[in-house]
Length: 203
Image 1: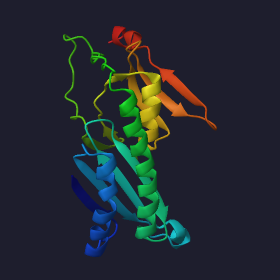
Image 2: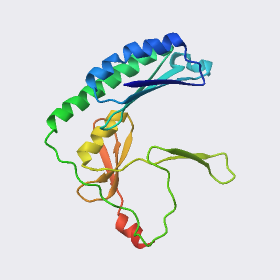
Image 3: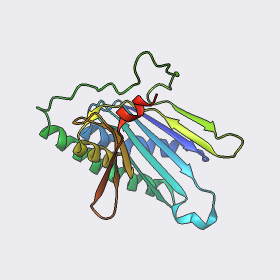
């Protein structure tokens, strides 16, 4: 398992890199198929945020869904411990879910692209991120393409929780509609679906 440690607005010491390597040994026990773990350490220079000036983000790249966790603290070692605790809990959930779904047959991909005769602009490869300025304004929009695999709403909620995001885009395996699940208040969630047939008819 490859471990990649990088710093944003901060230098990562050799001592901290070695500490990360020893700590992440637990990850391989819960995710033996993990190919790579990315650890991003960032520093917030604002003195008013001294208690949360260090942020650690850990991302596990596996053959299954991406599992991610992040945390902030006053020093990187504490932030690493907090982020690792969240990550290990999510990895345990992933392992348990795999045991329950070994007999599950994945749904074949659904093609929701425009008809072949329609001109299609080249798009970024899945996983690539592109930043584009919005006209003459200082606004910068970051675009990232993810590989879309049809899944149920339950699976989408599960993957959303694994990456710790408030929303998750997916293709509904029952309707083939582009959809998004999102977190509301407490333990309630919402689902928004797009009628892609209407959009394609307008092209």
